[in-house]
Image 1 (cartoon, rainbow over the protein chains, first blue to last red):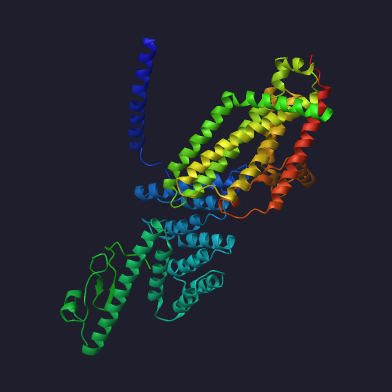
Image 2: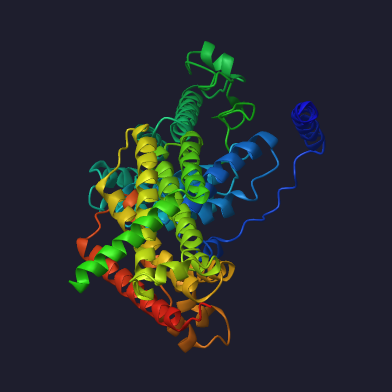
Length: 283
Length: 260
């Protein structure tokens, strides 16, 4: 009896110690190579034996964990799209997969996979599979406009969304605003305000908040560029720095909404968000 | 008079089968694991990003489906074979009890066992849903009813195999048929995917095998769709007809079986 208890205690002591050693050794081996090793959705569905909804949940949670891990590790998102596609294939009505998945895929690295075409395609698939869900079609339109820079197609999709029963009245007006010349940034701002309004607290709302800062900073930069252009036309000269322009009363501030100074090109007279700013994105 | 005494005998066999089954460690263990899984759902919901209710409902219904099927196959496959192997069947059959009554009574006892396990698991699911203010909705109840039909049909498959072969083979046969029954859509379209697979074979298997996917209303229930009563009636008719056919075939084979 005493021997058995001693063996039991010994084993109980060894197991956690061994586990922590394994953890250390595995972390010393570095991150595992990120190669696509996910079965495609249709194969998984065919083999799901009636448990496709449960498997969809597991794939979704795996996608979230994967996104978080890879974002920290910075080793790419090769498996993200297959995981999301499989979750969506297993449960066609799992709208959060399309909505969050599109953000994860569309955002530029290191925040996302930098694959906006795939993000928009995922939303399009979700909207096609759920024709009564105006929000999915709306987000397809917004993402087409914002991430693919295709205002004409984005407006068309928003008009389609506005015709779905239950869609809010302002959607058709928003589509018109996108198509109107010069109003693109304001339209983008409105879109992100809408997305933030409609989103649950968490990743989507936070992302919308960040995008609002980006667009507001771009609007600031655009307005500053226009003010500098007007000053140059009026006086025939361009002060060499933003600080000088502020002293001359041409512009009111020199920083974006993250507090980082804008870039200024004195030759062209253009102001843009600095690459050093967390609000900088590739256009 | 004959009908009354027959129903009394059926009741007696069913009740004893039920008591034997719920006392088995397998039954208690499976229900315990189902509860554990539902508890795990409460943890998983936190990493699901605003999908608490869906995740808990999916895991709960999945657990009812999976563990209910395990109970149906493992207990059902043992119901007749065990008495044959232990030779206790001889003691029963010297009483005024026909082999058909024995099989039907055993099957009814299994159905009671399945019903009890599902009721317990539904309590677990309701408690888990209650923690996220979801509650147990009527749409979920329709999915649970369809699952009950499906699992009772799986039990009939297991009892059928139990009348003709040993316990191990009965479990194997019932498992294979239950898996094929959940892949009927694949079989139906096999000729499209697999080159050279005869279309008539795929369609034939689709029509003959028990189509357990018919009973999968989990997705609709989780999204709160209303399930028309007509489909529940049709499913009941399908399950009843298939079960009666299986038990009748089992009884026929069991009648010819040499028990010496």
